[in-house]
Figure (cartoon, rainbow, N blue to C red):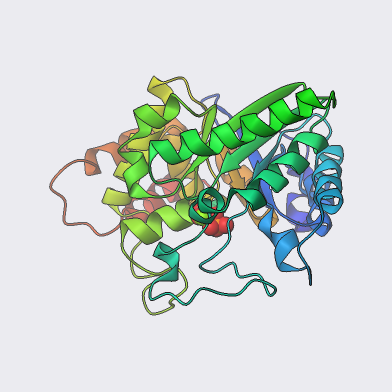
Length: 329
Ligand code: PEP
Ligand code: MG
């Protein structure tokens, strides 16, 4: 965290019009944990559990998984930690797993699809999460869910592990919240239905934008071709936030855009009150939000959504707004 932001470390991220925004960290390894205190983050909004698997020479044992999850919760103290179950395949390859050759791995056999087809691995991980959560508040979310029945099936696997722990008279988590990552356009159109089965929703904007614009996030020729501040992208983000709000389901964004001040300001204006980001984003985003009147920005953006616009980005409009308002972006 740059020294320039030291003074903001303990300051809540409250907008000028009084919204309290929770700024959380994206993490995945032990080395990330001290960043929480260094940056003054309000918790871990995305713990990428596959990182432990990717840096190991062998599949981490139950004990090793449990230990890491425990240490993450210890480091967070009273702050929330949201564990994302294994998001394997596509860009996340394990050295000790035979890769399945596929034409389009990002749209292939990956993530929750592997987990539901081969539930042994995910049940093992869920067992570790339930054990680590003993006596604590456990938050788990499932990645790359595309249909509601996948969420229902994943949730059932977690409940099975809770039952197992109960039968073995193990100490259970004090509270369990089970969330879903919304990172495919199809799930946006099922937001009402999925909220019936999710205690919270976290928008994985990296994948959501990849699939929304049909532009491979790992292909530099196309990855930056479409702006996440395109009116169509902001419309779907608004639609998701509104859908979750209607269902009283807490919603956050955990893709890279949450860590960029201009984009973060737009997300807050669209109704997101929790953002999870790389540590480098916490200071700059907080600094921007402290100077933001979210309602004013909403009024600036909204006329450009849901109309027949030819604009391919609202970036210039939002930049000018921020200049006028003295928002550092
Ligand atoms: C995302 O897709 O936005 C996300 C946070 O998950 P990952 O980048 O790990 O795919
Ligand atoms: Mg993702």
